Length: 211
Image 1 (tube, rainbow, N blue to C red):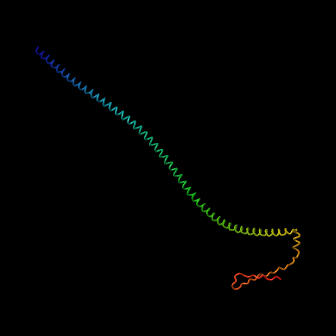
Image 2 (image 1 turned 90 degrees about the vertical axis):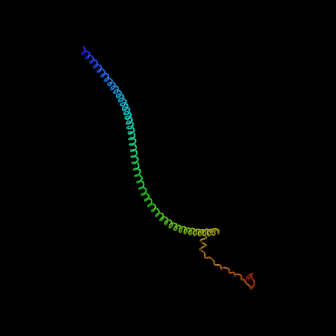
């Protein structure tokens, strides 16, 4: 009986010890499980935060990529505009160089033409002066001839008037010219003599005695 009681007691103690140990281990396991749950919740929270951060980073990266694409497009557009501006500037520079060369050539040609025109003008002035002097002399001679002819015409007109005043025909005038004219001596008159006494200032005229 004592042995059975001892054995029962031992088994009871062993059972209680095992139960206590199991309870302790269960508590430990519960603590571990709770800690695991907490760690899992923390990990989930961290994972969610990391996922949110990743999403934000991806969104920011997408925005940066879009902005980079926009900047790249603007840069390409600016490069294209710069290339076009350089090309236009090159064309304008070449055009201006051609215009400058053409202007220099035209200026040289114009200068040569001006020199030629000046030489022609000097020659023309010289010819004009020579022609003017010649024409002036000819005009003066013509005026003299005209005056001479006019005087002759006036004389002929006066003679004609004298002939016409006689009432004779031209044939009668010609016949009269053929007749030898009678010479009539011209009368001679003595000019009055002036006597100047010593102190007389008024001359005394003595008329000659008529025969």
